[in-house]
Image (cartoon, rainbow, N blue to C red):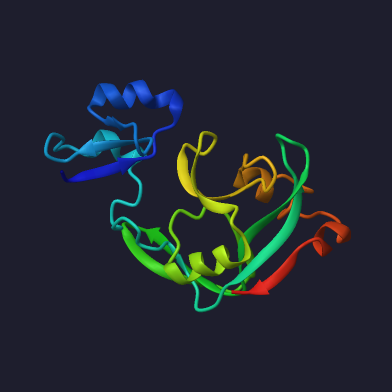
Length: 185
């Protein structure tokens, strides 16, 4: 089956279904069966990277590092080590006027929401931790590589770790910055 995955917000699921989108319960994603749907116009706002093949990277780097920090688990309240990828320089996919191109970024970043990893990066992460794996996030409504508590195995979502000030990878004080250790990948 030829299909296109969609990123449909929960509140718009009924609208997508009425238009002909289908739900893939195993992968938890709405999609279009291209053997049935011929007009993409009603679905344009939900189409995810139509010009990219599955597992094509949207970010790439010649060198990566692994960042380690400590966070209190939301569920068991015990401290757990958490990990992420740190990039000094990287290229990322950009779309402008229906053209896809790579743009160089030279500001260091700790990345979140990693949906695909090349085998070398995945192996490097597995060497330092057994608690970083691909899992489904209800909050993000997608699968991505995420941390799990070392104690109770609860998912430690990327938004909480990367976007909430004062947490593992969103430091706001000098002490919080010093909590992060960087290792060569």
